[in-house]
Image (tube, rainbow, N blue to C red; front, side, top):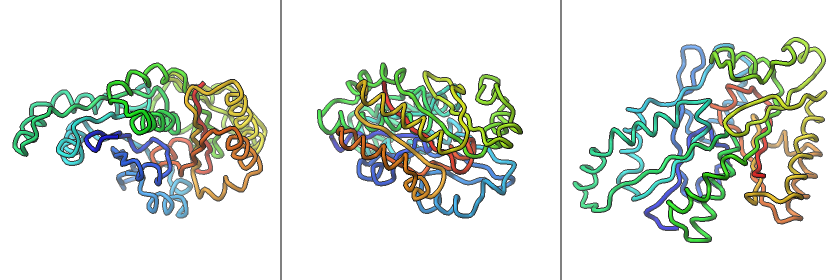
Length: 313
């Protein structure tokens, strides 16, 4: 993998900090707002862990996440990428749920002349090029694609253009399963967004789910999020999701990796029997697995204690 190329992701992409750091993956931030307080989510692991330990989500009934504007994105690209790399592949969360994809494309389009001037002033003759990919998925879904992008760049010495061509068809084959603990966040964040296309809780009410410990399983697939199942209790939900992943491994994965995230201290999910059994199963079959602490941007929308898993069929 050439030092002149890199992969960039938005802060909502759930991959372990160690993986992101080892592969020099650049993080493009989100804003997170809690009441009158606005913070930057840049996937700092220490700040994220403190966020969960302090129970910020449990205390906040007025929170939202928003992408940086196109102008702010242009400034970030100028500062972080334009003079450091010749080519960048930016992979974003699904454009149907966020303006991040739209904003970065606008920033690139409007700022090309400025980027050219900056590079010329530094004696860099090659034109800066950034390719932007809509993952058609969210949370751990883009993470699967990022893993494959890094593998292609490192193991196959592929060009950014070749990686883009290989990954684009796969964006329609990534399946993400979301298992929330706290239905309040799932229901009310969608309501706050005014997102009529989000039918995650259409088929049973928040109060019934809360009273009877019914959990929905939400699937992210091809740019949409839909409730695809319901289970009694979190443990049953884990068993269902890991069962889906085991079947996918047996059928053959489009990308040989499974990505997961948890909205809280990772030790909480790692002690679950279903998780331990799945990790062993995947390892025995040569499938890499990745578990990350969920970004604060994602957790605002799905609540603390939420578990997410993605694979490519």
